[in-house]
Structures are given as C-alpha cells and as structure tokens.
Length: 182
Image (tube, rainbow, N blue to C red; front, side, top):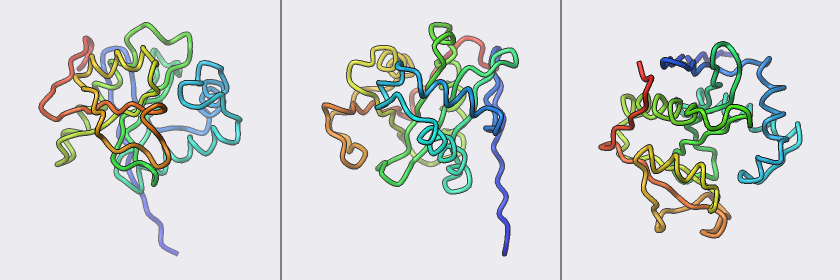
C-alpha cells in the first residue's frame, strides 16, 4: 500500500486563522450544523450527516487541491470556510458557515476574502461560485460584498432547482477587500 500526503495551508488575517480541520473541532462543527439556523443549508443535520460533511471538506484537499478550513478567532473556533467540489457540484464552490454568536462580526467576509485570494493565486480558473438558498439575506449580502453577481443561467448542483439554489459567481478580476487582511 502506498500513502499519499497533502498539505492544508494555514491562512492568517489580522483577526482570524484559517487552518486544517482537527478531530477536536468536530463537536463544535456538529453543534453548528444541528442548530436550526442551518436550515438555509437543508439542516438541521444529525451528527452522522455532519461527520460526512466534515470528512468531505477534509478529503477535498487530497482529491481536489482545495477544501475546508476551520476558522479561529483568538484561538476560539467560530466556523468553517470551504472551497470544494463534491461529485454533484458542476464547478468549485466557495461556502461559509459560522456559529450563531460569531455572526455579524465580519468574520465570514474576512475568511472568504482570504480563501478567494488563496484560490486565485493557485488556479487558472476565471470564476468560482457560491450556492446560496434564495432568501438567505446574510449570505446573499456577503457574496455581493465579495464582488459576486447573481448568475441565473448557471448550472446548479445535481437535482437542485432555481427555487432551491441561487448561484452567485465570483470573478477573478474582482479583488475582494476586507479590513484586517494581512
């Protein structure tokens, strides 16, 4: 048997650290996905489904060269940011999720800006998408602040309709800005 290794980079901003998932993160991650606030993603989710999501975001690094980062603020876990492309996604997607008490502090903007800059430096792709449940105002606003535009003609994940999923397209030419980027 041969082994394969891969590197998950650590990204730092003024206030945040985006880092590799650790098994110790899973309780916080599962609690975030069990919260009724996860309804915009199809949740709340069981611990078993949360484990599948957690492992997918980690495995994406080996399979795709990008994946999920855990977000820490002052050493405390606050959420996840990911660039991923599961089998049913037609193209790579930038997604984010924060625990409730971390919302409204600019963490998602700061983490997404760092992830986008990292991605643009490592790919030839000219676009990336964010799949957002229509009516999820916080995520729609964040995507727009990042420079993404609604792309009603974009292909959606397998089995999803326009009523279930809006596609916001990020363009390489757009340079996201967030205070605190280092």
